[in-house]
Length: 337
Length: 292
Image (cartoon, rainbow over all chains, first blue to last red; front, side, top):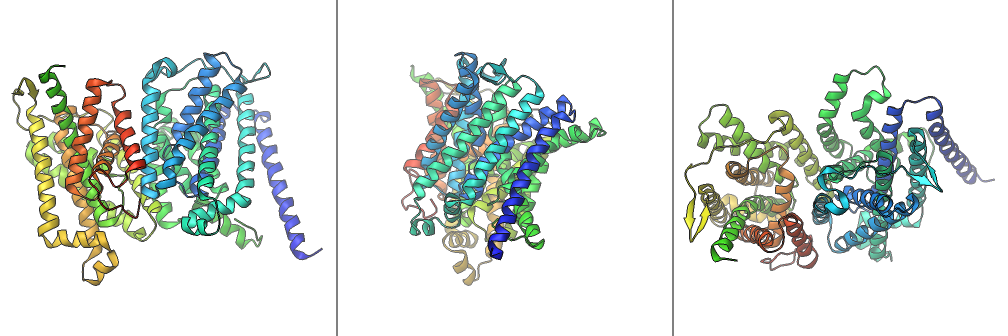
């Protein structure tokens, strides 16, 4: 056995152990008697994990900025809610429609990305988000307008309704883990290398024989589809949706999560999204925390996100992911980032 | 539709169009000398209105409060450029986009803390009954808006054509390195550009507050519309920005008249996407920019 294959085996073992540890922790949380509030907050963390994993692929790896991801979440949420509540379809059909329609939206937005870069793509996606926001608000017969869309049934699989906080939590986190593993596989493979090449220089990627058009279109569709999936989970776990959840501000927050987590990293953005999602609900994790402290955190949420994002870009452009990679190098475990 | 009624829609379109034009001019000034699209431009529009309301509320007479509001907004923009953008000036466009997005989040959130969540207003610059043009009513404040837009575009054109600073700004739009070799202090040019752009946006925010009121969250839409106007006309040219702004305002107003008021924002932003896809250099742009 050569030393290289030995270290590769150790690394694979460590990765498997890490995955098992995460799964065990996820399973243990409801068994340890976490209260309803904490479980609900953790459902939000899981949903954002799915969105951020998709955005990290598109923005962090392939370098295509999207300031329209909240719109894809909204498309998924409204599609699924409408199909299940008004057309009486089972939840799994609702989810499928949500993913399909959000992916179609992603394809639509991939068209400008074939011509536009940087600033212009950012503005085009921002415009897309605002247009969808107007539709969510005004297409009242489908979306319920500003009054919102309520009474959405819980997720149900084969006639079994997942209507407890613990059930919702396990469902969302199960999906989130699967999505993160999928994204992890993508970034470690040929597609991931192609994405990084595209991020580095589009001309260089083209010259190396990468199908840039296909890659952009696929990545946009996948990323939007994951956002649609998260939207469906959100709609059915929370039971109520309204346009404000899917506005520009939310899209900006998603981009902030990826930037703080680090461009070109998967674990970093996922950790950043968990931390930023938990911030306004800090009292769910720290039981003794006073109401006033939480109120301050909630009211200064946007300031904290914005300032952190600027500081990260100026002082530590590789974000949390970069810090993790450096830490891993110093403990001597070599590996691809 | 009667002529007077149609004229009323046209005047309303030109009114909102001149606001878009002022915001668009700000995008154009920053883009010309830096190549950056400043995502915080809409927040300068918001700050102009809010700070003027604040100074007015503190007891300043209206003209002084407006001037103070515009200058203070320019100060915020210059500070932002100096503190947040200059350290990463040489980074790629994506990084600069992220910094200006972060700034817009922070400015907006701080404005909510400082001025509260409510809508605020200002008195009209010259109070009085509406004027009548061929049966259509025109608020006096609209005349101020048009006048200020005209003054802004004329002064900018003069600045670019006749002054040393304007020539330095135009040189920077071609090449920063070459400009520096010619002895131009490019860092100062960029800083001044941000100040001018913010002042233009703030002027729009100030002039519109007596008509529509203002609040901490008006910046996002204003920025998006202003950018759509700048793109529609052709980014980088002041006259084109104003034409783009007025065209966008007219388009919105006529879509209200003939289609529906519900989807007016969606229609104007749809035009933005269409122009971006089909003709990114804008209606009046001649050269296709390499950056697009």
